[in-house]
Image 1 (cartoon, rainbow, N blue to C red):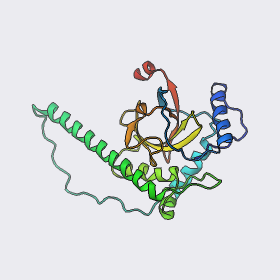
Image 2: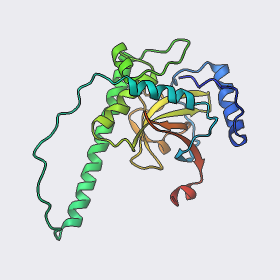
Image 3: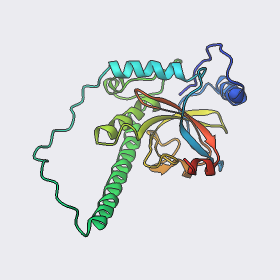
Image 4: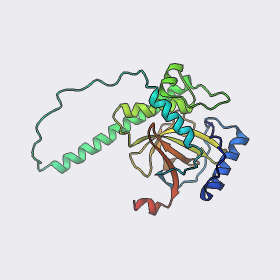
Length: 247
């Protein structure tokens, strides 16, 4: 996956040096989806939901994909409706706290199990359905990916992004994410599940960044750049851990 081409506007001073390094690496290395992971140990805390700068070079590419994704609805059947779920609400019992805690624990375990199964499934499918981009880095929609029978990391990632939301994960906790490896300038697209807003789970569609499902803090050598969905866009910014804990 290649970084965006600058539109000529001058970036803000606070991010000029970082973006220059990113764009310089792109020119030298002709980036695509990331290759095999490196063993690096740089770990930081991030605010994943900061507003993007007005001159953010990723924003036009994200906005273009968002328009196409919303307009190109996939032809996939949704889950069947479940009836008979109504009923009267009873009074709180003495064991309310115990049952509530057990319910929360069971629910969290099942959600993690489901997400891990999705990670294993997409990484297995990617071995057969990975199709590299040509000279132009086109971000496919989900429908384009299904119709073509595959894509590179930014197309295959959509199966996880949409799949988790179709299975009941909230739109406010599942996002696409662009990550960057400073060691060699590689960019990559992954799904982030924000069970914890400060340390999301990462599902890598191709396994180039990580196998299985791990939290971002457990994956050294990678920097989150952008977090977005088909309707929202955020910029990930480094913060002090004490500042993040105070939010």
